Image (cartoon, rainbow, N blue to C red; front, top):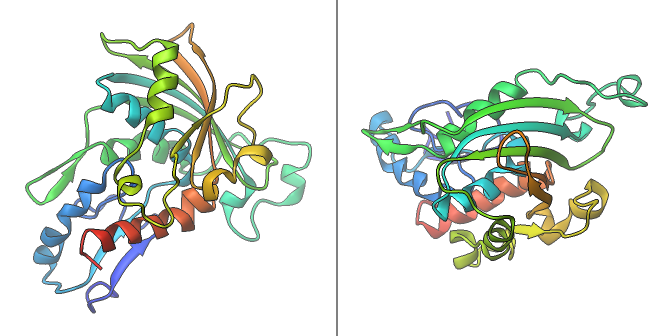
Length: 260
């Protein structure tokens, strides 16, 4: 209703994530998907209004790192992801305290489906007035609620195609990665979108979730994987990067592109 009334809608909610002509943006990965907005308006008869959404909070702990590798020509065929998601991700009043004290809940309704499907739309392409999913990577996700207030952590294993980076190359790619929000110097964009920690016990939610305005993804424990090729741990702030802050950054991007 807001978009039909001429009001741009930049949403954190899950509604419209799978509407074919609604872009689901992570500003550093698929800013070009905003280019579907004129077609979205035309298909609905809207003048100034439009809808843009952001993805589920948990995938933002690892999507930017995998995109950085893909940008350097490393195909990712399969991913195995185990998330440890903060209680704030459940909203207020959240998970009952007796479920979280001295406990882990190995189920979050709908979360694994989102984690396995949303990356394909983000990595997809605009074709014929719709965003068509990418063919891969194939993602297998285990999503768990853990007794942490803020900060979603993901343990990720990657299988590459024929071309495989060394551990040193991965560290270098992540450390140097910059994208359109950094080029435009958008106010809420992290200066360094991926922060690489060398310590054996990082990232940690309490120590790393607030890095660079709580908008950076912090990675660590980068090492070979005996099942696939590479494994690492990623962390992002679920209520900033994964929610309000990500929405603000998307709005800043849309303004820079002339849609606001």
